[in-house]
Each structure stands twice: as structure tokens, then as C-alpha cells.
Image (cartoon, rainbow, N blue to C red; front, side, top):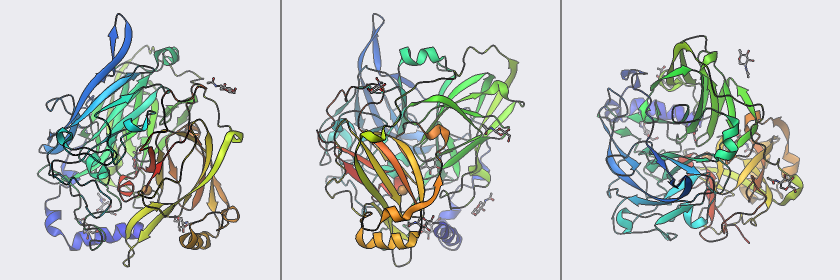
Length: 569
Ligand SMILES: *[C@@H]1O[C@H](CO)[C@@H](O)[C@H](O)[C@H]1NC(C)=O
Ligand SMILES: *[C@@H]1O[C@H](CO)[C@@H](O)[C@H](O)[C@H]1NC(C)=O
Ligand SMILES: *[C@@H]1O[C@H](CO)[C@@H](O)[C@H](O)[C@H]1NC(C)=O
Ligand SMILES: *[C@@H]1O[C@H](CO)[C@@H](O)[C@H](O)[C@H]1NC(C)=O
Ligand SMILES: *[C@@H]1O[C@H](CO)[C@@H](O)[C@H](O)[C@H]1NC(C)=O
Ligand SMILES: CC(=O)N[C@H]1CO[C@H](CO)[C@@H](O)[C@@H]1O
Ligand SMILES: [Cu+2]
């Protein structure tokens, strides 16, 4: 990937000068001038005589203009919202209560012409009638019936005029029976996920459980508990989002590129925003909504992150770190204690190379995220971080009923450029091979045979990372795998003998995404049941079209690092 990126940069200087001329130089935008917005909040429940009851919401997808920076002209975007006027990028934060149903009718009001270049030569939702852009919403981290999961083939166009082959309903039912945590919703349409997210179709979703979380006394309420949705974008001088419209193998895929990187970092819809904070603790739920950029966050003044939860569940105990590496779609749920700051300013910065881990170092614009200005006055802090958070059962290896091998492949063209990526050498359309039984646990050995780190995300299930072992004589193993695509016949046990990588303490809990290190076998225990209770799912997970698992680098997912996951009785 490194070579590819360098050659891209070289080409960028030689060719496409016209396009470059119109690109916005990020240094033209002054950092830390816009206030960090708080996205509108929508309650996913209603109160009736002090008891919470289910609620039905309508959330639309609209084309509108959005101001990403004081000095940038308004940008055409696709935005979620209760109405076109109220739609935002990211969309409204939905606040649900554990055990109370939220119903959402996701309505598509988008025109038929996309604002970004998409590629019809990869497996893509293409409406025959050109009635609009296909979209479908997935609630990332949610546990609910397959028909509500936003399957890539359950897409629909404006007015539900045209629908994908797996479409079955207009209103999605989120029963919120799972453990409390930070989730997010985003588009998942076949072959369009990367462009629909780039256009703005993302938002946060929080499930709260007051009886369980209240006693922890973590920072709480609109002022102190804030989602930060972070992504990277490039712009043209006219304010429009820039995405290269020439593929890296133009004769095969005229548009598709293996990874999108932008040079401007956006938090809650503003480029490098600023926020004034009180000298006390805040909870920040940092969601990485980039297509391909990894972030390694740190504070320039040495403030620490106190991790209280992973992307899916609370940790048993808080974990303190100086930096935190987030893959696309990972969530860092941290408390930051600004009273510990020796300065009145703290810049949240990023030093992850891109692509991660072997790509170019960050420099200049993409190394800064946002600035906190800390008020001088010391305050009595009513919030705390207790020594014990919420204990969930540890993975029980003896309960695993299946062992699977999941190999990640990248294919290249004659000119050595990636053309597509597959899991287990199979396109998405091939029948499901991962068919776990509801209520069981399985061990998956994820074998990364590419040079990139792929954040793997499994719908419905939660997993814990057991270990990561380097492959020895990797080239020999890879050669065998490219011929036979069979980890056992290629003697995985003889190759998975190298260095061990340890799993960071704050990533040892239950998760729904994890970074699969290149050249390593990552062993995960995947659980197909709730973890906060011993009851089985409160819904039937066995229907069609089932679920999916995929790489969360969206450009990979679209082409086509995604496979079906069908749960059996
Ligand atoms: C867009 O991508 C193509 C193919 O990889 C490359 O040749 C071109 O230089 C890129 N353009 C810019 C402006 O980066
Ligand atoms: C965000 O996620 C993308 C891919 O999903 C990843 O490449 C990027 O590094 C992540 N960034 C942060 C800040 O975590
Ligand atoms: C953070 O960095 C400081 C200074 O390098 C060090 O003293 C401290 O132990 C680090 N904390 C953690 C949790 O790594
Ligand atoms: C950052 O690095 C890229 C690629 O190495 C280079 O093209 C660019 O000029 C650098 N920008 C700055 C501000 O140093
Ligand atoms: C579930 O059952 C196991 C074994 O009986 C027990 O150890 C565990 O604490 C139970 N978990 C919950 C959340 O009740
Ligand atoms: C087994 C295998 O294919 N490993 C590859 C993993 O990624 C590294 C680069 O990080 C390659 O050099 C290996 O060939
Ligand atoms: Cu990937």
C-alpha cells in the first residue's frame, strides 16, 4: 500500500493538474475557529406518567448544504434529520433506553444523482428506474432481527419507489434489549457505503440503562457526556467534497480506489473545532467514522484517557492510557479529567500513519483534531470514575462449539494495483459459509494475508480478542492459501508460531470491531447471545437475509470484503 500511495502522490503532481488546481489547500483553513457543535438529540422513547414507553420516529435523508468551516463555502451533503431544515452532518443523536423499543422509519428523500463518484463495476445497488440513490440504514452495534439490520441488499430509493432484493419493511424495530453502550447508525447500501458515508449519512445512537449506569456516577447529561464523531474529508475550493474520480485500475474499475483519505479532520460536522470546557471530568464517546483513516489520539499537554467502555460494552475496570488507536468505526468511550491539566489549552492530536500501519506519517493538517480551552476556575466535581465499572462474564473457551478460519485476501492487477478484496476467497453473493447456531460461541481464526490492517466488524455478535500470533514462513503459507484457500491443508498450526502481540487492556472486553494485524492470525471468541443476561436473544435472529460481517474500511467493504452471516436455530 505504501508504494501505491507514493505513486499516487507522484501521479497527482504530474497528471490531473486541473483537478488539483481546484482542490482546497488545508492550510488555507484556520484551525480551531468554529465551536464544536452538539448534534440534535432525539429521544427513542416517550414518557407516560413517569414511565418510559416505546416510540416511533421518522428520520429522513436529505440533500442539503452544510457549513464545515467558517471560511469554506457551504458543502452539498446528504444528511439525516427529522426534516430537511433540521438535518445535520452527522445526523441527530438518538438516545434509547434499555428495554424500551424504538421504531424508526428511515425515509429516503435523495435525488437520483449522487454528489460523489461511484463505480458501477463493483457489486453495486443500481436502481433500474433511476428513481433515486439507494440507501439502507444499519445500526452499528445493534442486536435485533435480521429484517431490521440494514442488509446491503435491503436498500430502497426515494419514496420506496424501488427496493433491493432483500428489502422487507419500511419501519425498523430496535428493541434495545442489549447492554448499555455507544452505537452509531450509518448507510450500508451495496457498493455505495463508502460514498454514502462520505456524503454525510452517519449519526450516533446511545443505549442507556439508568439503573445500571446511574450508580457509577460517571460524567452524565448533555453538558458532560458528548459524542465526538470524527472523520476526514478533502474539499474543493468551491466547498464541495473532493473524492478522486479515477480508479487506481481505471481499465477494470473506472472509479474505485482502495482507500479514501481526506486531509481535513472534521469533528461533529466542523473542521478542527474548538470547545471550552470546565475544569472537571467529561465523558467523550469518540466514534471514528472515517472511511479508511486510523487515528492514534493523544493530548498535546499530556492529559490522559480513562477508558470506561469499548465499542460495545463497559469495561470491568477503567484503563488509563496516554494515547488511543482507533480503527475506522471503532469507538473510544473515555473520561477526560480536565482538572488535571497544567495548561489552559489541550489539543487533541493524531499521529497514526496512513494507510495504517505501513503508510505515510501524518504531517500538518491531519495531525490535529480539535482544541479544548480549559476554564481557569477550579470546581467541585460531582462526577467520578469508580474502580469497578460493569463486570460481564469472561469468554468461556470451553463453550465454543465451532472453530472457523477466516482468511483475508487482496487481489492485484498486472500493474500491481489492488482490484478487489475478498474474505475466504469468496464474493458476497456466494452462499453463507458462516452459519452459527443462536446461543453458541465460536472461535474464529482471522488470517490477514494482506499488507493492510483490516478492522473486522461482525453484525449481531460480540467478540473478545484471545490472542494475535505472527505467521512464520508467511510467504510459503500465503502461496499455499492462494492455491488451496484452506487453512488446515496449508498447515496453519505450523505457521501460527511467531511473535505474539498483546491486546491492549482497554480492548480486552467485548467488542464488535477489531484491528486484524497484517501477517498475523487473530483468534477471537464470538458470542451469538446477550452477555448481560443468560437469556437468549429476545428476538428471532434466524430469519433471512441474515446478517453480515465485513472489513470496516468502507472502500474494502464495498469491493467486496463482506460475507453473509446466517444464524441457525
Ligand atoms: C486520482 O487517482 C488516479 C489513479 O490512482 C491518479 O492517477 C491521480 O493522480 C489521482 N488524482 C489526484 C488529484 O490525486
Ligand atoms: C477511523 O476508522 C478508520 C477506518 O475505519 C481508520 O482507518 C481510522 O484510522 C480511524 N481513525 C480514528 C481516529 O480512529
Ligand atoms: C503517560 O505518560 C507519562 C509521561 O510520559 C507517564 O509518566 C505516564 O505513566 C503515562 N501514563 C500511562 C497510563 O501510560
Ligand atoms: C505531507 O506529506 C505528504 C506526503 O508525504 C506531502 O505530499 C505533503 O506535502 C506533506 N505536507 C506537509 C504540510 O508537510
Ligand atoms: C450466566 O451463567 C453463568 C454460569 O452459570 C454464570 O457464571 C454467570 O454469572 C451468569 N451471568 C449472568 C449475567 O447472569
Ligand atoms: C501471510 C502473509 O501473507 N502475510 C503478509 C502480511 O502482511 C505483510 C506486510 O505487513 C506481508 O509482508 C506478508 O506477506
Ligand atoms: Cu479492509
